[in-house]
Amino acid sequence: MSQIMSLANYVKRRNGVALGAPHSMRNMLYRSFGAGSFAQFWQHWNPIWGYYLARKVARPLSAVLPTWMAVIITFAVSGALHDIAISLVKGRVVVLFSPWFVLMSLVVLASRQPTLAFHQSPWLLRASINLFIILACLAVSLWLLPLLGYGH
Image 1: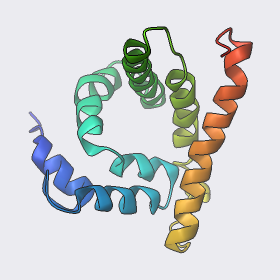
Image 2 (image 1 turned 90 degrees about the horizontal axis):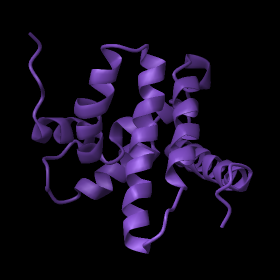
Image 3 (image 1 turned 180 degrees about the horizontal axis):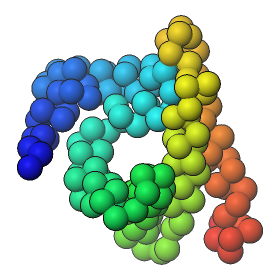
């Protein structure tokens, strides 16, 4: 039986510093934006959220579905939870994160191909590429929302 990594160890592995340590936010931003692929970006982004998504959504789904499908559904669940939180705060249904995150999941899957990696690029270029992908997926989502009946 495989041993489950603790949250503290998971965060330390992803951020390079202990949970709650000084500079943990800085390390997360530096490592995620400086990742050499968009798939690797998500290995460092928000490790506490990622830990629970991995344990409660991705791992159980991967046991019964192909990995690519588990990735898409995990991103969709994360997006839906973000949408629910915003909807509760705003007092009305908000749909933004779900389509945005699903689009990003498709880029994550595509970016697992070695030809789409940019590890050898300078940090600033890697950060710019990762930020561009996030913003491009957001722009496409905003464009799609009215077509899906969720116009603002």
